[in-house]
Length: 455
Image (tube, rainbow, N blue to C red; front, top):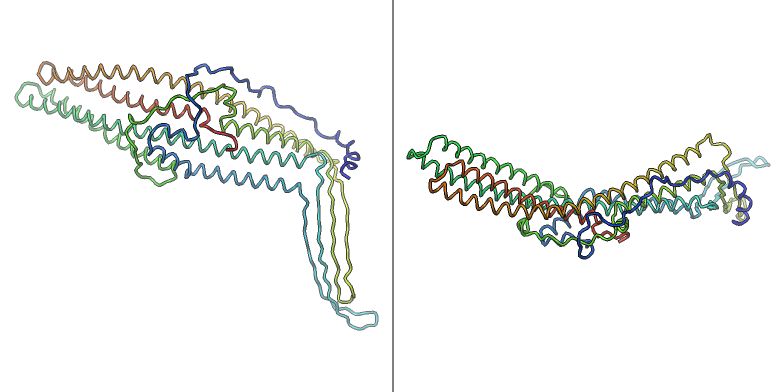
């Protein structure tokens, strides 16, 4: 019967809206190789944060991935999309309903005498829409692609939360290191103030030098509460990522104890398109929009619906129940819709083009992020080597300045300049160490974080 219906309705297929190809401007051309590629070792492990060698960091990241609110929202969206796919797939199946009616009546018969009767009529009804042209199948395909896209979006959310937590933890350890540097500076300036005060008491130095020492000691002390406030805020931010109330965060060690893992193998740029969940989401969203456009075009075609029903009539006046049934079919073909169907096709085509350009943007953004991350890792390596050499020179100069000041061969200004230089060098080196860790975290993230579609 399906073959006969296709032959009868085939002439109407010419009424379908013409196909609209994807815009050529949305095509993605992948580079042949990375401009800033680095020697790599192995692929990205899905639990890449363990490579930093801090158990507290591992626990925090895994708690965030499990309990983060944004991840929970993404999981709920996956359930919604899965239900929508089930709803769309149900259209391919027939529907089966049942109904029953009963009544009791009192009337007058032909002889003028009252008559009472009880009747009941249970009926089973079936209906089925024949998907001759694949419109419903396209809707199912769109729903499935949207479901898979929501899963990829959930994976992207988990990767983003893991990266933000790992980077935030490194920032917290950097703030701890800054606090140590500031406390050391406070101790050094307190010692300088003690020397300045003892010299001023015996008239060896002026009150100006004493006041300068007091001011610089207070200036260093002023930095400490600022750093402690930043630590508290960073802890609260990390607790929020982990879906917890504000409070302290466990540390596994110091910033210098964090292991800088090896740079992973970057692979070819074309392989990146299969390794990032955000690109997978964009690709699946594009597939869904393609299927939706195909279904919209097929709205111009006729639809065939088959119906059947069967039941029995029971009546107290009848000796036996009467069986009733019906079988039929209908064809619905659009004749005049006031432009509604064509507007639906244009809307679907526009959304498909948006999805195509969104995919292009996601791919171009991914290529740029990887290049930036690789360049950042290489640059920070060079910066840290220079900063460590600079810090060693400044520390040696600070040692000489301190000895000269204690021996009375130089003024407090010379000692102060050396202290300031060492403070800036130490703070800069702490920041560079933290930047190196966060740069590696970013590199793991932009390379896809070990994502595998459907895993």
